[in-house]
Length: 495
Image (cartoon, rainbow, N blue to C red; front, side, top):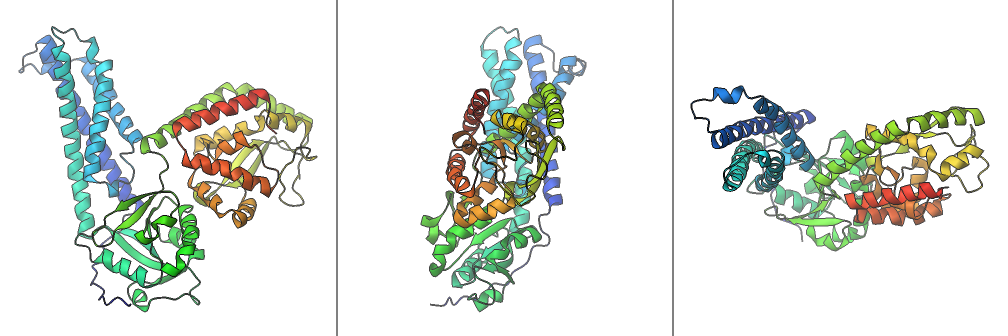
């Protein structure tokens, strides 16, 4: 039965959250955290001086002439900012929750103060251990209250801007029937506006064959079909996608999610009647009149993502430094044993389908693919004699540490492929698109357990290991894969 609902009169947001707006707010949080950390350190330093050295309250001059105070005023706030960055405090600042901010700030304060306790306070000469407990609680309470107080003010201001429609998040609606229209109406009729600024909707089928609810066309433009999803999301800088398809379209939900998930770091929500068909981890959000399921695209916690990047930079930097003689010797041998350049550079597809240039030591003769793209095999005549050795010990891969430093690759992640082979794989295994949620890696669970693939059949077979990695992604898993990779290199079991 048709929905007898009159569309609301919608007050459009005055402006959209641009990269500039997000960046400005990030700087505000950074400055606020820096200032509160400096104030908390100053108060704590005076507290220690008055408690240990018995400095009278009217002799603040002894505080500002102490070199340790000024050293701490630089190093301690810098440490706090690093901890907050690892925690993910400066990511998606326009969507912060005051309640979640409370928990995150409390956890960070407890961790940071504990570190400072062991680094600083244990060196104090004290009359009683009671001083330790009082000092710990003093710094914890003061730092937490100052930090959260300033953050609360900033977050509340941002939330009010969203609720008053001064900030809106560009949203794409996938669906063209009554369910899509009902979802739109429910979201717009909420007592508190949650920021969804609908720029248009997509139908699953091409516009000339799709069944489109005329009421939906009256409130937002029909931007095209699912096949145009990538360009529409990128052109309109979409931040959120809401899937609201009809019951007779449920069989397409898997393809819809796979397509959207591989495009960008989007917030993806879906109407709850299709929850049994979802791919990935889900969380139910009660969005007033329209409860939606949020698909969590973050495969690890924010601190693990930060730690993974720190590990990448550290391992790649140390490896390039220690292996610099190996780089030089390998380059000389490659140049001396076969004509052609030392390095081989090729376009591969990275995270969210973005192309990048991947670098390797050349292990094949020049013009090896003059007849078109072709995967290597065990006895491939295109591989040079020294190239076979490099592949066995993965020596040809070490220039990719440069890609890791640039951030186009990571140490552990699915191996990047060329678009030509991705198209062939997706025809047989559409779930391959899930791999594009991650940065490609130098090594992977598929590389460790299966090795290099010599044809599309083997690529599809290896895919199961990379999908298994996604489901079990963690820092511990990365370390395990790296250790197995080192074992394979030492045993010369590469190909």
